[in-house]
Length: 74
Image 1 (cartoon, rainbow, N blue to C red):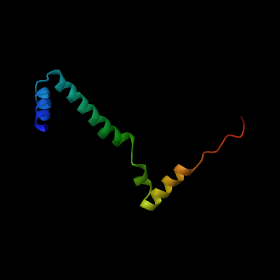
Image 2 (image 1 turned 45 degrees about the horizontal axis):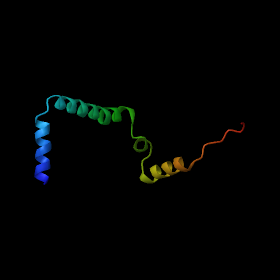
Image 3 (image 1 turned 90 degrees about the vertical axis):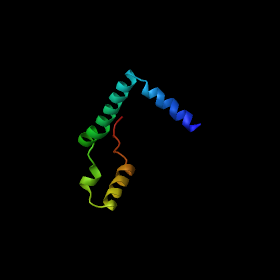
Image 4 (image 1 turned 30 degrees about the horizontal axis):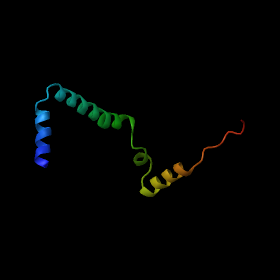
C-alpha cells in the first residue's frame, strides 16, 4: 500500500511541468521568509540582552505577568 501511494505521488510530480516551477517559487519564498527575514527583522532579544537562563526566564515571567497601567479617565 505504501509503495502504491509513493508511486502515485512520484509519477504525478515527475510529470508536472508548471507544477515544478510553482514548487520552486514556493521553496524560494519559504527560504526568504524563514532564513533572510528572520535574521534581519527578528533578532534574538533574550540571548543578546541576558547572559543566563535564569535572567531570561525572570524577564519573560515579568513580561507575561505584568499588567499595563490603566488610564485614569474614561
